[in-house]
Image 1 (cartoon, rainbow, N blue to C red):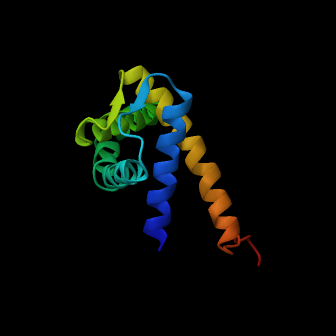
Image 2: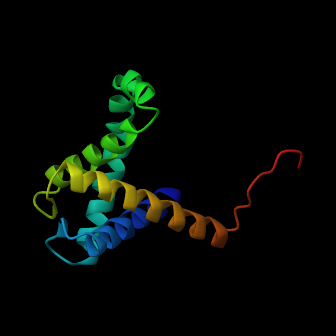
Image 3: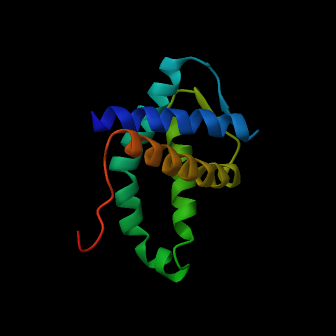
Length: 126
């Protein structure tokens, strides 16, 4: 069930990002397209991002973590390349900005979904 929620959250984040940023386009506006993009983005983040993050760890440390924004942008570009033209991103700069927007949207949506699913935050000492 958790994976389905994550796919839907990714799909909504991609859709909202495409709506907000002019450099991101989804060519076929259908629910199945957004869900497919959510699946592709989830797989890329689960399989490729940890490897890229591990290989670029020194660069992340030197830039005080700012290179993670570039990694997020690259994951979005990879998703666009794997989507078969369903997702179009104008360039790396747009992808980095889109990665920031998607990160914010994902955090908000996961917080809302977590609040409605009955999950409580665990506090130290409880």
